[in-house]
Length: 184
Length: 179
Image (cartoon, rainbow over all chains, first blue to last red; front, side, top):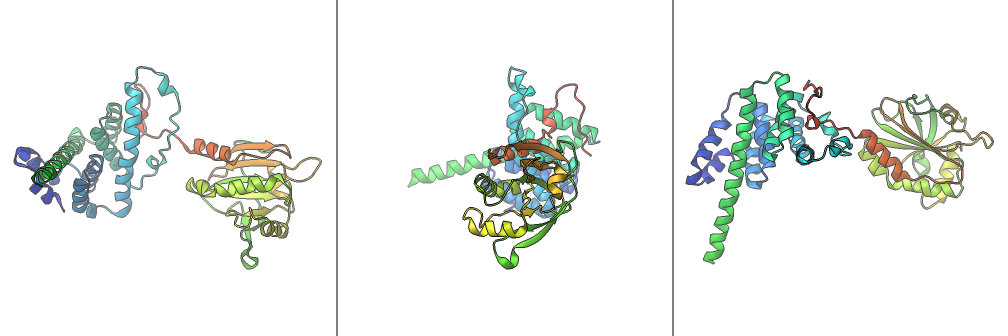
């Protein structure tokens, strides 16, 4: 399983995604670690087991164990924060931002990887999970840390494409098993 | 009595860590379990009635406390031999997963300021101490009233829970630095 496998499985109507995926796997704007982590985090967040498997197989070797752990931690904790803070941002009432969240998120203080990289992966996952306030906040942190718009954009392009690939391959999987079911 | 913001006093005590004769005793001092939160709870006397229920209740929550990077120390002014005898005689205490400290010289009870003025034994006091040795929670009951260890766990959770994510950023706030 690899990026090559995923590309091979993408149907003709999704050729754009296939080519984007290939380009992004070779993207140079980010460091190898940042790129690998972004691919893995956004694959997990896109919730397609086959895509997660392929992306991890392709990229996990670029990361040492604590860093891979930090990537997974970012995805896990943003799974929670993206829902919670999106709610705070969208709710009509100011009351909720005054209440203590009472949600543990201590892994953010000590993720086991570079702080900046961790923030980048949080941003990428927030893009997949569609939390506007999270995106705004993490983007500001990254810009203050000195990342350029092009670098951050690269992470978001990866998030966008990985997500699209996940959705497409899931659909193809369903339709294939459906047609097998009908044939039977 | 010490309170929130005070430092834990230094101490060096014998403790019972097992019901088996050859593994029973160990020494615990203020440098033990570095980097961990400590939940230190005192009771007046071994071999009395309210205490075993509370102690066993803390024991049942030991994994929950450990998950939160906390160790539990139970303390009374009884000797380590009395602790061992009580552990072995009481079914709820036999497999207790945390140490029972023997504060026989009353150094820890006095250090914390929890000796009952007339009785001379420890009050039912509970302290949560952070990894830097600072007291963050204090609770004392009169002799006859047991504690609720679930409440202590709830407080520990609350002490450890901070909104660390910049997602909580409001327009105009200062920022966390991605150091």
